[in-house]
Length: 272
Image (tube, rainbow, N blue to C red; front, side):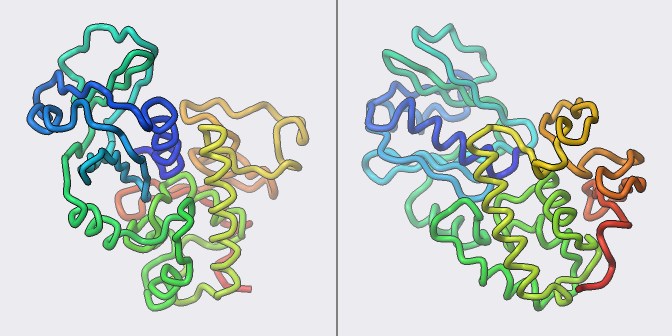
C-alpha cells in the first residue's frame, strides 16, 4: 500500500495537470458513472491529501474521495488519451493531459460533511500544515501498545506505513516493541521532526530514502540497494543482512499482520 508521501505527490500531480480546468470526467469501468456525469465539465478547484486519503475538489462543493488500498494505481499521460481499458475507474481528461485511476479501494463522491468526518478520524499527518504532533503523542503516551503498532495506526499518525515506521525507529535507536507509554516527549519530538523531513523528501523525490549522507553506498563503499521499492534504507526488507552501522543481523517478525524490521543491537529495549 502506498505511504503518505505518495498520496501527497499525487495531490500535487493532479493539481499540476488539472487545477483550474474543467476536465471531461468518465468512468470507463462503469462503477463511478453517475458521479462522473455530475462532475464532468466542472472546475477542479483543489486537491488535498491526508494520510493515505486523496481528495479532488470540484466547484460546487463536490469532492472525490480516493483511497488506493493495496492495488490502486494512477497513471498520467499527454493528450490525446488512448482508448481506456475497462479497468479504469476514473478518468480526467482535457486538451493537454489525462489521468487514469485503476483498482482503488475507494473512489466515491462525498459531501463536505463526509469529507470532514474522514479528517476527524485520522491522526495528524506529518506532511500537512495543520498537523498537531502533540495530539499524536497524547494517544501514544497513554497506550501500552508497541510504538511500532502505534505508528502504523492511522488514527494516531496518518500517512506512516511500513517503510517509514521501520526506518524512523531505527534512525532514533528505538526498540519497536517498546510500549507507547515508555516513549519520552523528547523522543517523540525527534521522531516527528524526522518524519516531516523524510516524508517531504519522499514527495520531492517520489521515492523513500532514509540513510544519512555518511551511510550512502558511495560514502560506505557498498553496493546500492536492489529492491522493487527502490531507495536506500537501513532495515526495511533487509532481514538477515548485516546492519550498516553495527554489522549485526537485521531481524524480522510479524506484528499486527505486517512485517517488522529492526536491528536488535542498534535499537535498544530501554529508553535513554
